[in-house]
Image 1 (tube, one colour):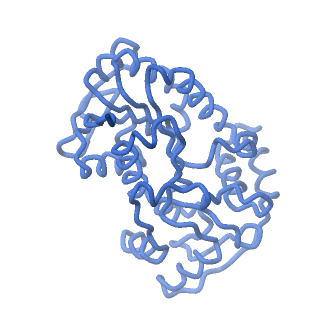
Image 2: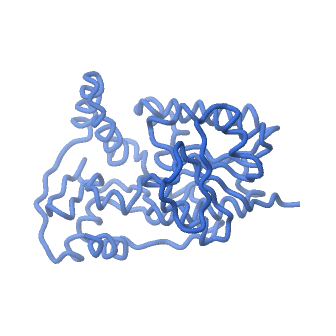
Length: 295
């Protein structure tokens, strides 16, 4: 008999990922709660606020009656996840979704390049060691497409009409909108008989920077100023920043992985679960129109 997931609690429910994730879980018909450290946090109407000081006992209490725990946490909270897992096991939670939601941390080249990839991997290793007590699903989405366009970290800045193309701009990159991540998580929970104890790769589309630039110029009706940069250069700069405790270097390292032409580490096209999960592709033009309209 398939595992039924109905009650879901999200750690990081008010964050950049957590907010849209909660919205789509509610739309998909789950009973959703948000785990918060303090009361009065603004959550979506109909989402229950569950307060915890993150002590073991309070986490167990927070997770009582929940079928799934989702860790929509940032880099700074990756280390908290083992505490969450221990509490989830004690509360008899059925499945835990760790804070993956990004680059493919199963890839050895990515593990060695990103300082936080090892933290993510150690959490999954911990879950694998406890598979007899709790299931897990690791959702790999690539960078967040709409957020990347809004913030400009995909190299195409819609506000300044400037583009930075790395290694020529023809490297394919798999990306997902925040909404698609929410739909992918919901589908993964509905199909736990297929997704349990696996990495699930999802996408909105796979695109190159040159194709993205072409779409951006079409949607905005403006010509962008283009600069060409090598990923070897930004990789070196990123490591230098981190040595000096400048954590903006993490973005340099991520961009060197996404856009580096040597290994295509950001292209997940051969691994995608989109069709199995019933996820509909999203075109770059449509996503760009939506982002531009939000400015």
